[in-house]
Image (tube, rainbow, N blue to C red; front, side):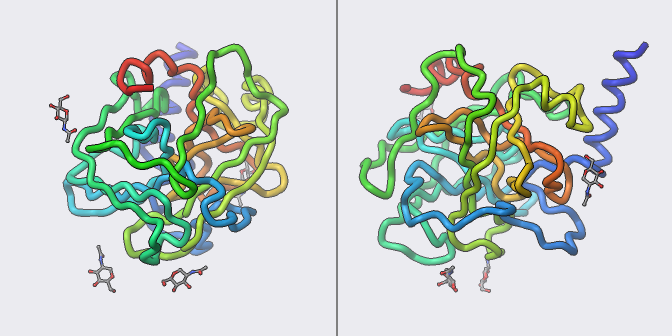
Amino acid sequence: MFTLFCILFIINAYTEAEHFSFHDRLSHTDPDGTLEIIGGKTAFPHWLGYQAGIKIEQNEGSVLFCGGSLITPSYILTAAHCLNSVYSLEVILGAHNISKKERTQLIIEPKNYTIHPDWNPELLINDIALIKLPKPVKIGLSKRTVRLPKDDKKNYAGQKGIVSGWGITKYNQTISNVLEYAKSIILSNEECKKIHPFDRVIQDTHLCLSGAGRISSCQGDSGGPLVVKGVQVGIVSFSMKKCNTTTPSVFTRVSKYLKWIREISDL
Ligand SMILES: *[C@@H]1O[C@H](CO)[C@@H](O)[C@H](O)[C@H]1NC(C)=O
Ligand SMILES: *[C@@H]1O[C@H](CO)[C@@H](O)[C@H](O)[C@H]1NC(C)=O
Ligand SMILES: *[C@@H]1O[C@H](CO)[C@@H](O)[C@H](O)[C@H]1NC(C)=O
Ligand SMILES: *[C@@H]1O[C@H](CO)[C@@H](O)[C@H](O)[C@H]1NC(C)=O
């Protein structure tokens, strides 16, 4: 009875979309205009050369913007919820100011992607997907792969993570033109459950980043990387609506998906 209530509560929370927000989705009204990495700094150009931007043209005609990361010369790691309804995809690598035509930019139109088979938008679990690039990209200063954890031994609690993104949601929206990043502390899942209003959503396959210091990832950062000492430990998944910085942002815990990533990609 109790469990069922909790599940219903979660589903309600999601469908009503009152409190929850996937980061790629612009809320209907956003008077605050908080559409970027909150409390973030401009990244030194190409310092985070693994960062990808992804434009998703959806079947209904709307265009979303998500983040991703280059994990091998042929694969981009991102969030499953970014690829809900794909008509066409465009991946941008080597960008700093995404609104500009920069010489370092490489724009690719991939045809193949794989969403985790157990992705569940109601329970917000397994929010992970891979995009296959038509041919391997040439690795250089502005386009680099990010390392993934070797195994699932560390939980990263107490470590500083760097989350990055352009924080824009629509093709033509240019709220943060240049790549931004923010540093914050990773919480243990126990700590996170204590302070997160949707504590029952948080599973072992999630990872929380503290909002202390008024840091939050926000819309348009979805699918982007959270990196600890050069290793990608998280994929931006969800947070509270309006990018509330008092609650932690929640990420897909990459170390729980190494087997799946190796199975699908050439990692
Ligand atoms: C990014 O490029 C656009 C288009 O050229 C320009 O209008 C904007 O000022 C640039 N942003 C920054 C922060 O340089
Ligand atoms: C997409 O995947 C299919 C099946 O694995 C493969 O036959 C095809 O060549 C791939 N297309 C591209 C553009 O990589
Ligand atoms: C983006 O803006 C330009 C100029 O305002 C317009 O021509 C173009 O159609 C827009 N593209 C999209 C996808 O909205
Ligand atoms: C942020 O979320 C907390 C609950 O976690 C709530 O008390 C607070 O009012 C929210 N702030 C805003 C600005 O919505």
